[in-house]
Image (cartoon, rainbow, N blue to C red; front, side, top):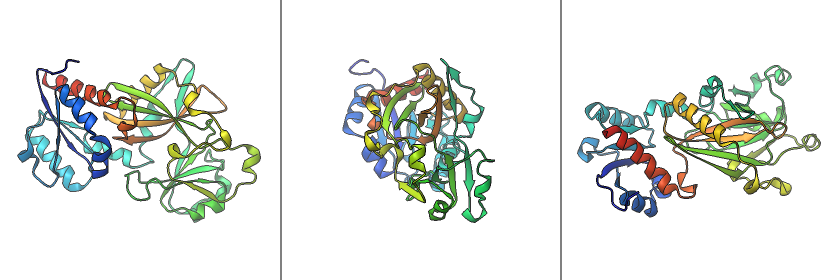
Length: 311
């Protein structure tokens, strides 16, 4: 791209303070500015009309006030792109509904398939009949995740549950997700419109059948991707990446099914079947700054959408 773009575009951002701190870095502001994008902070307490004009608005605020504020502005300014519609984002704030679109995607490329682990909603452990777990397609251990995936306190409090008694330590409602050994490696697929980047991260270590016989109750962990691999497990940095065609097709399919531009997908590879990939989580407006060269990744996406919208 040229050092100075001929046309300039105003992109407003409405983000929580922590997201501003991590995402709106001086390097991003500089790179975007050099390529024709002016990133403008939005005050959600001030009418948007007073802060306009904007070619595009990106946001990660979820209050009813902000949603109403944004809808009213969008109706008055239909040429301003809203990335993304609040009602579509809402689906990703519920761990039961976020993976539903994947069940309708038929992805099988280069002898690889993408699926979703078995899941069920548990409102009360007393109503859970452990004898029926196999009928439901489950067996211990299972991953227990809070139903709400809203980034709030407790939304990342996850546990590995090894038996029926382990369920008693959980907060409810909770989503139980099948645990699959995956070599201690997690693949994060970052999506920004047409742009896609896949990176490797450390994850939970595999649990052997022998080890399982000694584990009881529940083991908490804060974030799967931040938990180090135990016992020298897999080397995440050298793990084989998923086929690029599979990554691209999954990103495209989810982008269309979700109606969203800014998200990432957490994917694992079944340790027993290297052609079987499982999507375990989807996050809206993730930590893009963790990506190498995230500045051009985000800036090029913004240029794509504003140029297409003004063409």
